[in-house]
Image (cartoon, rainbow, N blue to C red; front, side, top):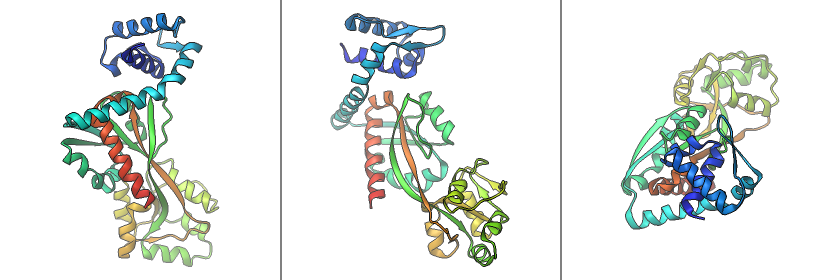
Length: 298
């Protein structure tokens, strides 16, 4: 079995699509079909059932994917690393993530990539946009606070950080002095990332604060905008600690007391397996994982 046929098989298996695999691998659909047909001859069993839209793996395909999928990814990553050591990685790296994380965290870790000759192109978006840009091949790597749910993508935890509720010292003083803390916080203007209130609801649940439906006063998918409003005495919010660490140290913000404590959240580095065939992408993945996971350990 050739490596190219196995890679084609894995891509078709993950995408459940001949045409999708062809786009990812930069092959024609007939070439992908020929690879699968040749592999089926070698295996001696059908691997896919063709449908009007896409394909369905057979039990033989499931067994083969379990045997070779991750091993093939690891082998290709090793080959990419070897190519990097021998020929360099000059070229553009397209990376997408949450705007605040890209600005506050990622930029501090880019120097080794730039020194290696990689031209970094940063894009911003929310979770669904990050997934879409990776699957469509517009970006090489993604950074998201949302766990991967699409089988065509892989991920590793990049950073774990504490999540805290914050406000200006004046607002915190008012909340603490209130006879009913829960009532007071529910009637203080809320600044949120989105209407789902994912960060805020987790903090409220952790601290056993029962609330009626809260409608945010301000919504922004760049938490730095909310941080700036908070420093001006507008409302309260919940955000990763790295976004407000400096402002707390300066006395511009203060942590809202958490009756039962804070919680942690994860950011994930995400990629499509096919992207790692490019040496610079494989190298960038390893560099970012090494630097940011080390920062978490510290």
